[in-house]
Image 1: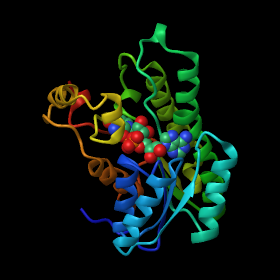
Image 2 (image 1 turned 45 degrees about the vertical axis):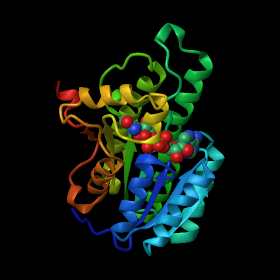
Image 3 (image 1 turned 180 degrees about the horizontal axis):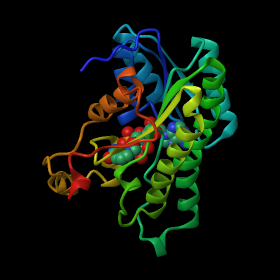
Image 4 (image 1 turned 90 degrees about the horizontal axis):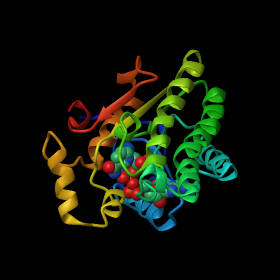
Length: 253
Ligand code: NAD
């Protein structure tokens, strides 16, 4: 699949690792100028370096998506550098700790909701203001299959990912007439540092995850990036308010 993104500017939060890095590289490969935003400076700068090595254009902006001032600066800096933001992949997120609902700490709840849910709202808030000014744009928010079904032991994560789908649909309705499309992507289990961290790198648990997938394997970050790029492209011009599942058939069971 090759989608042309020439003359487009794409912003990716959480672009320093996993799915966000794959998405940033895919945008760059399609010809877009890329703004990589992440709280992790080393990871973000490494993604930018990878894009530069492939002769693409990119900048890194250190951003904590849970902080309004950071997100406002992220958008201002992106526009100052590249002039506009055509596509935004709001992807930064954490899994948080693992414990059932009655054992989930208030601290874990607040941290996960603040990064995963408030972070998406703040990102959309400032991106949409810019997109209204420039006459349009496209947003894709990273939800999860945990935004569609319950998952044991990660109540805050599940609540945040369900919330992202509600926010996505709401913004899609609010700004449809202003040429702004807003969609979500719902990955299944994807082979990234987040999953390695969540499973404690335990090969047996990783194998079990893969075994649970109808396709018999975990997804790769590039397979999510492909969906994000399509949703951002003109090929998806009639798609808005949609939560696209890319999960190897996991939620079809
Ligand atoms: P990852 O841990 O590899 O990457 C997440 C990135 O987000 C990291 O670079 C991290 O530094 C950044 N980040 C964390 N907190 C941040 C903050 N406050 N501000 C800015 N950046 C921050 O994880 P991943 O697997 O690539 O996940 C990316 C997104 O996809 C997440 O929202 C995750 O919930 C979602 N997702 C992942 C999977 C999976 O199986 N890997 C499945 C469904 C959904």
